[in-house]
Image (cartoon, rainbow, N blue to C red; front, side, top):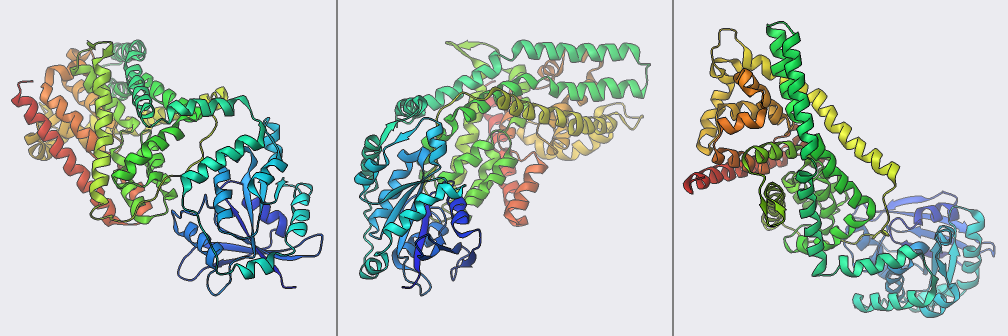
Length: 613
């Protein structure tokens, strides 16, 4: 008898590679199919009963609806064979026992192909450890195909599977040859989902309380109407909290920075070193560090939502909207990551298989409001927007929410345009595992929070400190300068001022935008240094008070509009260059974002001036 050819099929992260290596001893031949770069591995094994088998490890798939090249290759091989090879004689369909409910629809779709198969409940030990009890015989009866449990990491855990292969595969070759031209696929996936849920209800004898509670919560959280309302309410509450909860801590830090500046001014002798410490370092770095409480509160919410399992639900809720505008459903996670920082967001776009969709995601990621914008927004909102209440809501929090919402709407709009022009292509739907809800692990949560906080402080202690010192020098010299305009910084800023004056920006803003390219929040430190040098004793009340006396409200609003769009971050541009491997795409990103920033700031300034603000 010739060797059986059996395909190993399963969803990503179901333990497929571990089982393949365990069965074949880790010895495999890797091959690419013609015309594509999709890898498959083929390994050989001998069962205890003497059967010789060629085991084909296919790319991970969730079902018969291909969303990427590797999934399309896997499905084509299962149905029709490829490169002159016949379809496999049968399949081992591997599912994670702990996720039986979500993976059963994959089993039903594989069954619809019409080829012999064995269902392998992998990692059964971990599922039982967590309290899940499965009636394997009932599951086998309901599916109408053999079902066997497996612990892929141990030889003893694979013994039952090998025995099942010996027992079940005797007639596979003859049956496969008879059905070689038949590959019936039922495309009614919703009916399969209902059938899968019904089978799971019958086969699962007991499951952990949190599994049941998760399904009950998801009935509301993932509801097509209630779900988006809950998501919007959570985000709105988050931005309200950023302002309401941080106030006392920010006041304390601001008072501390002012006191430190006054103390240094009293103890240090007059001269250049005195001015550098007080006006350069303390005013520059202190004006940014004061926003640390808001950074902490923002990441406290984001990390809590991630650790609880809610962020995955938010991705599912946003998927349909994103598909409507042309974004890949998988793009939500990279864009969500960009709320913390655009750099990891751009890098995580690697998970998107379609090149055009990946480029679109990279191009719009900087529009998501990263945490580096928070000091800029907070400074301007705190200085120019009164802390009034609108009903039960804080007006400043409403404005902050509006700025974040503007970034999201802008990203969606730009993606819509790009996907119908320069990155035109087909879309892919989002399929992802929804984890069980759980309380965040306190240790992991605090370590992650500290990681973000320390990164902010590191930037304050390196990039912002360095730029504050350089800017102090440029704004203070030459010694003969009698005004900011006559300083080196003023000379540089005067060139940009001519370009920025039509949108309401003054010389100080032009100067601050240059070092602000190093990182967005550096602009706050730059403004702090510039106004400290100009204000002298009059600037002891802080940067916000200085801006109130120097800027009009239309200018302040235009500055906010600029920062919604402006690519004020060299690191983001460098990451985009590395991920796209193209100066052209990087230049396109910089140009369109700068154009949007200029238009938005100009429109905001002139409209605000026209209505009398």
